[in-house]
Image (tube, rainbow, N blue to C red; front, side, top):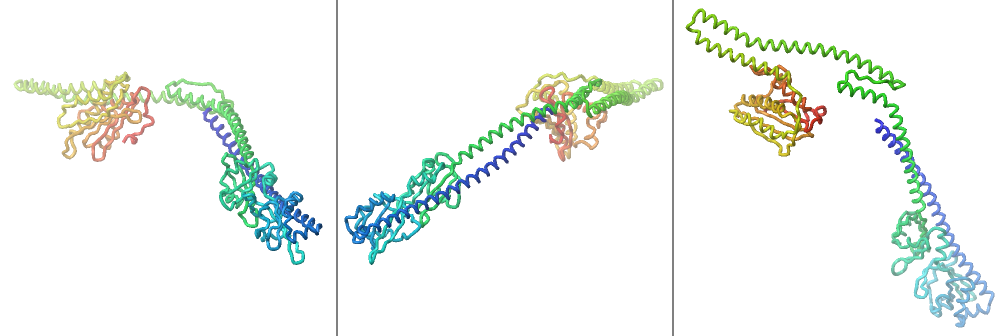
Amino acid sequence: MTARLAVELFLLAVLITAACAWTAIVLVDETFERSLDEELRVMLEGALRAVKGRGETVERSLERLEEALLAEPELLERFLTEDRGLADEASRWMNRFQLQFLVVLNGEGKVLSSGHQPEQIGLFDRTFDDIHGSPARLMRLRVAGEEQTALLARREKRVGLRTLVLVGGAALDRLLVEQVAGHEGALLVEAASEGPFRLLASERAVSLGQSDLERLVDGAAEGPIKLRDPSGLPWLVGVLPLGSEAGEAWLVLAVELTRMEALRRQLLEAFLLLALGVGLVAAFAGVWIARRTARPVLDLVGAFDAIARGEADYSFGVRAQDEMQEVVASFSRLHRALEDQRRRSMAVERVAAWREVALHVAHEVKNPLAPIRLTVENLLRVRAQAPEKFEAMFRDGMRMILEEVQQLSRMVSEFAEFARLPLPARRPVALAELIDRVVELYGSEPGVTIRKDLATDLPAVELDADQVSRALKNVIGNAIEAARAGRHGDVGAVDIGARVSDGMAQIEVTDNGPGFSQEAEQRLFEPYFTTKRHGVGLGMALTYRIVIEHGGLIFAENRPGLGARVVIRLPLRSGESNVARVRAEDLS
């Protein structure tokens, strides 16, 4: 009881702590996720502002460039007249106005000067026709054989019938990526016109850039997603599409979730230690409570065990100081009253038992004495009245007297045997050999076939071979007599089987006789009950006593339409009785 209560309290404390831990971790996760979602949202808004700010910077730089050009009428005139000596002017202006891309065109799209693609000077380029005013537009440019993504703005200046077009821009580069990443991670993913995705990654998001970029962009397009990069780091990822047409480029922002997983792991470890500590405290408390509460109960259990062992004078001191004290005192009074009643009942039962035995013995002895007395009286009368007939009657009378004396002697022997049956002298015995020896005694019985079905793995059994042999003789002998009576003209048959079942040796004796009557099935093992004309009724009672004193079980039953069956179960070793937990119906 102490151990069970301690375990139960330990488990209860652990379960309560686990429930609290689960609730706390869920709440922390939800709070952390809301915080991360908010952090990612702020990052996306900041990235959008950064991209717009870069576009506005390009627009302002191009506006200043136009103002500087208008401030120099001679230079403007040279551009309007397409002076070839101004081919390098765009390069000078790029450095002056902090532009990474600059091209000057006439109204027909002819390149007059280009800072990033000087090889285009003198050619017509209609790439920038779709760029109008503000805001700056995202476009893909090929510079030195490599594609780059740029924010471009355009300004037109019309002078008379001629038009001068200025197109300038800034690249979306690693500097922008690092600027919007802050202390988290960012990627600039570009869909190249040919080949796979291209990207620029911040320092913290290098491993994230090794992911499947197309799947990453498609998954995060609907909202933030959680994923692990190829190195195993967890991320919360959001996507900001760039450009006038979705799909030209994406700014991928990511918040590393290592902090959340580390916090969850720390919480789990803390709650595990807490659960262990609380559980141990609860277990010790359970031990203390159980010992304090169970001590008088254990005293009562000890008293029950002592009484079960036959210690009729067992007594114990009262150590309880609460309601259990009255329970113990009441039990003591009940014990004494029951013991007095038991002693009186035993005395009455002994008197009644001896009275029954005396009546039965007197009855059984009286039966053969009556014919003996009549025979003697007849012999005396014939000898006095007809001496010539005395010899013939003497032989018949002596034969009848001897038969009755033998019957009387047999009855007395059975009474004596039943009364003085000793306790079993156990020793290991090969059960199969014991059964074989008993069956050999009935091998020549006429009109009956005896069949054996003994398991090959029958072990040695600790038993008194003489007593168990006597019990088997009684059972098998009765089965042979029943089988010899026959059923509907069938040939008499007795089957003897033996096996190990549920840790006990089980012997079955079946016959194809008429079976037990209802009364015989109920009273088969009662002393003095018999269905035989000259039986005393002690054979099966003796068998029952032998089996029970071996710690075994015996029962008999009818098999519907097949005759009778008697089952004997014996423990394999002394002290291993399973009688209390085996029911007869479990053996059928």
